Length: 241
Image 1 (cartoon, rainbow, N blue to C red):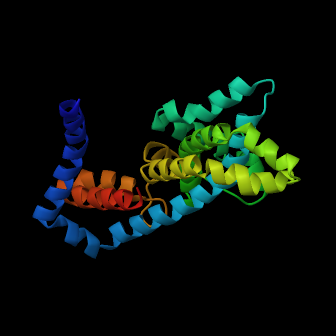
Image 2: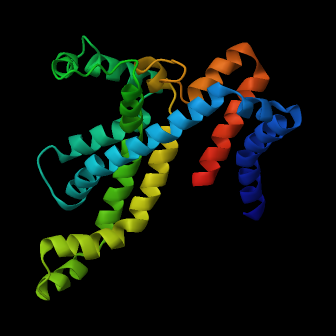
Image 3: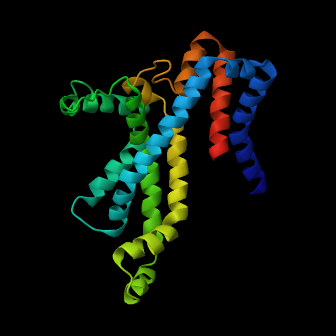
């Protein structure tokens, strides 16, 4: 078992080590840090994922709680819809977002009435990230809420605690480890999002070009620049994980 575990860890670590080593030995990393495009993409990636996580928390937490604690008609369909973005190919997710929120999409006309045009904007980057990352948070939070023993909450009710006090001082703290794990997974997925973003938001430097899109763009021109951008993405992800 130890041998197999070492082989599995080596398999997962070798590509990352090779990438970072190539970036350091070629000197491309320092050149990339001196360039404006990498810094712009890094700032956009970090800022957009922070906003995406806030939206995921606000919208995903109530949904996770309801799925964990209630039974209703169509619950299995709702859970399937939550999990669907995980298995959808990124290109399909991008097309779905375009047909839903594009100018001629299902909700595009309603958005234009209130002055919002999503495709090929920074807001489209956030929407794409929320769509692909929210299932990871919702699934983890749902498991966390389910893991809280009903007897603990019932004891608090017997002692006179209100429902808000039970939720804020018992349920959420006990579910917090799972919620935290879900946040990390959702953030990592949002940071690495590529396919849905490039189709729905485009690859506009300084506005919609996140680090994954920059890696793709740089690879068209040269390997060293793409390696540097990819290494910065790996370092940022490792730092948070």
